[in-house]
Each structure stands twice: as C-alpha cells, then as structure tokens.
Amino acid sequence: MLLYAIIFYVCGALLLAAGIAIWFGKTGLIHYYHRQNVKDHKGYGRGMGIAISGMGISSCLSATVSFLGEEWIGLSIGVFFVGFTVMFIFAWLVQKKYNDGMFS
Image 1 (spheres, helix red, strand yellow):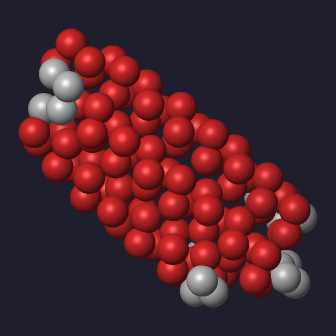
Image 2 (spheres, one colour; image 1 turned 45 degrees about the vertical axis):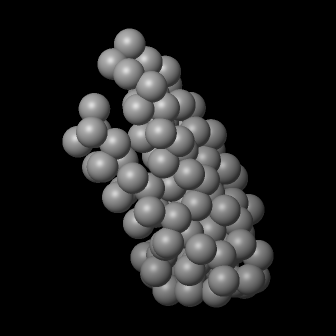
C-alpha cells in the first residue's frame, strides 16, 4: 500500500501544481489545439485549473484512504475514479464553453 500511496501522492502533487499554475494564468500549459478558439483566457484558465487541481486532490485523497489498510483499497480506488470522473466532466464543460467543444 505504501508504493500505491507514494505513486498517487506524486501524481496528485504534479496535477495540483499544474492546475494551480493554469488557474493563475499559465494557460500555455494546455496544448494550443485545445485553446485555439478561446477568447476569455482568464475564465478558461480558472475553469481548467479547478478541474486539473480537483484531479490532483482526488488522487491525494485516494492515497490517504489507502493508509487505512488493504481492506479499504476498494474505497480508495473508488474515491480516485469518482473524483477524476467528476473533474473530467467539469473540464469537458469548461472546454465546451470556452472553445466551442472538445475537438473544435
């Protein structure tokens, strides 16, 4: 469980750092293709930053729950997938709002 927690903490920290950077205006971290039609970079950065930070937080929460023991691994994985899915949907909605869709 320790290796699981270390991997998820590292991934969570990286996602959280990237999300915060994007939130505060570094939208260049997002591939140009996904931001080519964006007019409001501040709003877009805020929304995508929240989504990516949320993914990092769910990863860290999953790692924390894994310390409860091996019988809690199902809950730990569930926390990760629910959080990641909710934040992915949020990112998709932000992308749709500011860039006219995911692939436009």
